[in-house]
Image (cartoon, rainbow, N blue to C red):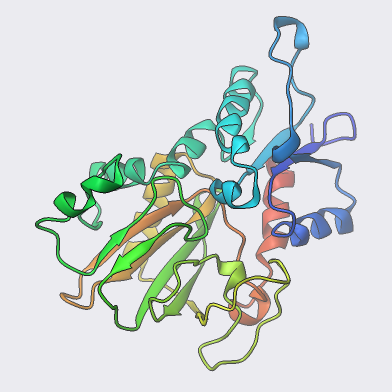
Length: 294
């Protein structure tokens, strides 16, 4: 049974602007769906409440919600996803994916478990421990919050050189596309919807991000990773139970080694995607949602 008005697709989200292209595509198809605002959501946990009336729930909650006054929704989402899991509701990027999304420490542990390259890292719970924890690490050293999102709270010690970061997106756990982001190291907000220039300096249409998205001097281009990296990214997402999201990696200029360093269960897709990668990923996303609704 596909989605109906009685059992619609539910889009659980928090950011007011990132998902406008998704909603526009659903509206264009007249697909039965409802919007669930994570910042002001509630659910009935009593025994007699019954199963939530959704054919599918698409979790698009952002771990950077605390930057927009909705930090309470981060941990609330964990309990809501557990509620949906207990009731057997199909969730795209469900409980297990959200656990991984909200812990950089768990992401690194996952990469280690899979035997994939990743940066050396120390986990601390007090800022005063940072100097001692950095002993034995090669500089530059990055200090990164365990729950981040949109590069929030990241600090880098020692001036970096210009570098490229590759972000590989998956849909349904399979490779969708990849982009290369060029950064001078002055910004850690690598939200693909906020990267608004091509490598040649041309402005992209900012269709999927706020009007006041940061002018971060990042540049982007479409890119096709080697097959072995695509396979590794798909392996990461399968192990993390992430259906839709992105994995970021970089090449260390000091030794030429690849390091995976970030696993995301939230993907806003690159701005002006048809121009950068040659197709509209939101159309394929809705194809996937409609196929998964039961």
